[in-house]
Each structure stands twice: as C-alpha cells, then as structure tokens.
Length: 319
Image (cartoon, rainbow, N blue to C red; front, side, top):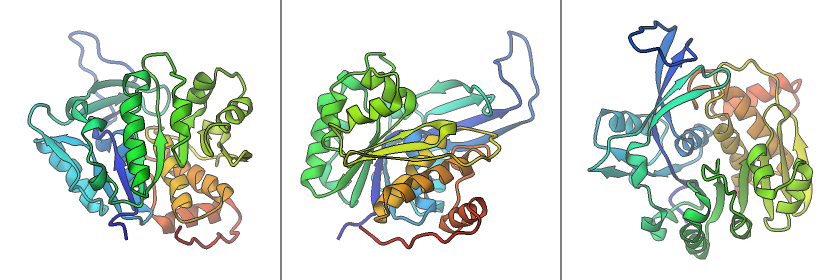
C-alpha cells in the first residue's frame, strides 16, 4: 500500500496579488491600489492544494527558504492536510515571490525564483517520491533537462506508480521534439492549446492531438474559454467550459489539472474527468489567488448540479 494518493513535485512560492493596478509605478510615483493579497503560488503548489481540497492524500516535494514566507506556505499546506516531509529547506535562497498586476486580464509579473532554483530532478530520491500511488511532475525544460527528466520518469515507473506531467511554457522557444519520447512513459500528459500547437508544429488542435496520440496514450489539452479536449487510446473527447465571471485567472490551468486528475485517480471516465477539470478551473477564476476559489468535493458537486440542472453525478471508485 502506498502512503499517499499522490506526490506532487515542483515549484512553490508566495503570490502577492495587486488588485486594481495594471502597471508598475513610474519613478518617484506612489500609487494606491484596491487591495494586496498574499497567497501560496507556483503551479505545482496550486495543483497540490486543489487536489488536497478534493479529499486526496497529498505530499509535496519542493524547496522553500528558511524564512517567514516558507513557514506561511508550510502552514497553508498543513491546513489542507498536505504532507511536507519531502520539502527541502534552502540555506542559500529565500522563498520565491511573484507579484501579479492586473490579475483579471493580461497579467504582468515581477518574480524572484528564490529557493525554486534549487529544485533539481536529478537529486530526487525515487524511493521517497514513489510513496504515492501517483506522481505529478513539473519543471520540464526541453533539451536542457530532457535526459534527467526522462530518467526519473523511468525510475518511478519501475516502482509501480502512475505519472502525470504538465510541461508548461518553453522559455527557450525551441519546443524540443524529444517531448514525444517522454509522452510514451506518462499516464496523463497535460498542456494548454498554445503549447500543444507549438510542440506539434500544427495550426489545428485536433490535428495536434492526433499527432500526439501516436506517442502518448492519454493526452489532455486545455482550451481556455473553449473548455478542454482529451485523446485517450486514440479517441478524442471534448467538454465545453462553464460560463462564469472571472476575477483572477491565476492558477486556472492548475485547478483544471487537479479536477481532471481527481477523476483519473478515482477511476472515472474521460468525459467526467474533463467535466471535473473544467468545473475546478471555473471555480478557480472566481476568486483572487490561484487556489482560493477551488472547492472541496461537496463544493464541486454543488457547482456541477447548479450548472447542469441538478443531474446526478457518477459514483467514484478508486483505481
């Protein structure tokens, strides 16, 4: 028996959300804003929080500074039952901080990576990470760390875990095609539409998905306002987005991932998992902060009943 339902590996930082200001003040200028909010940030951390809220047993593996911000993040994790025994403490860097301006439209950021710079997949201990029956990996950087990433994936698979991965944006602009080899080893491969089109060199998402489906058995693409689509065993399934008023889109993709992976880990079908993912993403954008708006399982079911005319939801059963 595994100790956790899932172990999440990746970035974690403080998000300082500036409400009511879209630009950095000019030199010598002081600007008063509507509000400033402090939340846990980082894609992997937001995913972990959202998944824990849905009732799964989660452990987080990352690096925090030895400071008040690191303590705050640990406390927030503990609040939702996330195990922090796999988190390392940096002796070099402080906990990362990201300042987000104008979160309701085109967000702008000032970021300090901090202790996240020390997260190296090559230093992970596979036996410790494999304490979860599922492992979610982030931090893929294309050619720069492809071989290391692939090696840890293979080591974890040898230990009997299922794997998911959200590759994120490629800052190098190369969109390394070695990613298709990685897909062969990942049980659920997640990305957004723009990333999928860049990696596949296609202009149409259906063509891109069909291309990826020749490598990965289960690929999921987030389409923003158009919902999400999945290719599993060659079959394409689409689910539309739920219409809600957005106040902060930070973490919407990570919340989608949590909803979808909850469905996967509970043995639900692709259509229901897409529905859960879209619902979690929709709830996320309704509040400031990447995971503030995400609900527990009861809240998820209430949201779906409200938006689907009260139709019954399928019973979940563990994989």
